[in-house]
Image 1 (cartoon, rainbow, N blue to C red):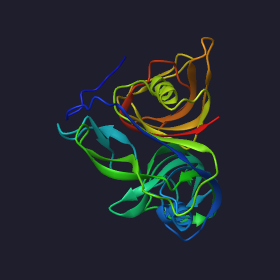
Image 2 (image 1 turned 90 degrees about the vertical axis):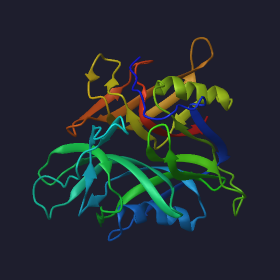
Image 3 (image 1 turned 30 degrees about the horizontal axis):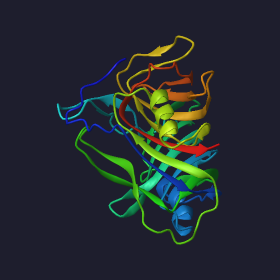
Length: 290
């Protein structure tokens, strides 16, 4: 399987994870707010500390984003492009087709890491890493979050990759007991197959079946079950649909349908080939049990 040599030492434990009772919240993204504020404010108000969000239908203006790119120095295996603005009318609106976001905390303030697919004012369809503090809502969209108060997600320096990265940490006692679904919050480290890591995670937490919710990260290229391949060594991805169910031997088997964005901003979509899609920098994962 493909791999990239990261600049720092690789910890033996490749999956960080916690289980917690959670809540499912549906809400409207309010126009006039930054994407960061629109996505996080209702969750913070509800006393939640971590979550995975899926949203669609919002119109953005102004909108700023970056694409995966080659490393600019030996301290990283990949980096980002320069900041992009939408093609077409500079004053036009970009329509979010679908996007996933991880809700957590950076420097003590609520923050989201967000990947999406969108249609720009000139009608072109692209995807990538959305800049949530430089992007604003021009028209409302709808969001659904799978979130918890029992675990936090926090940005910390990661010596292995030399990036500041989200990862789950204990949050202390929640303000109120949750009675919703059982959630597994995880961060997957580089150079492990995405589906295999999800199956390992399910075995760790005793899950026979689960649904992947609002998850995102990066892969070393991508290979699809139908034979298509994305050759770029770094891609930004989001899970469109993901399901874990018992295989013929009774062990958990993951099926993942992803949107994969290459270094040109082109979106490739489909079911991943099993065992052929290693994580590049990180993967932020939310599983709902059952």
